[in-house]
Amino acid sequence: MASRAEIDAEAKRPMAFFPHDANAHSDIKCRRLLRRGGAEAYGRWWLLCEQLAATDEHRLAIDTEEDAELIAEELQLDSADELMEFLAMLKSVGLVEMPGNGYVWSSRMMRNAEYFGEKRANGKRGGRPKKTTSEKGG
Image (cartoon, rainbow, N blue to C red; front, side, top):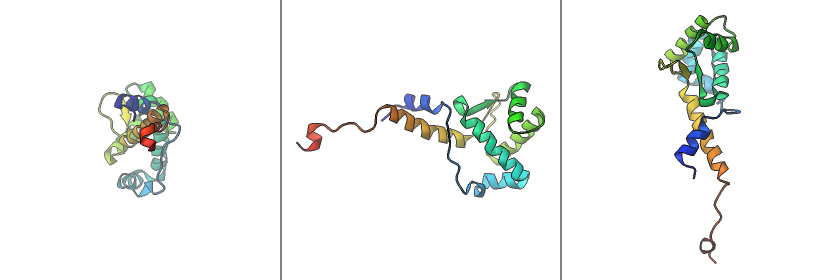
């Protein structure tokens, strides 16, 4: 079994993929997002998730105008101001956290990262340990 430090280190690495439940739209947070922003906002939410998954530590810097503009471009928004409005809507429905430290992140993506971090860390250990002679019964 991998140590907590090994799992944490692996969890910070970018993820090549993450689970997207077939019924994610039925989640209360996503239903609120669909109601407030429509399918366009819902699509942008998943674009943001892709960015979070592909980023070290699964959080995005939003503390400078340039950072916000770069994310806005990825989400096909026209400005940093539009991005901040969109992020505020995501925060209001509970899909992202913006603790005031210049970053935005999602607890869902952090859970995904933790899961994959554990898998990666345990995989580095080479699978199941070999049984000793006494465990084999011989």
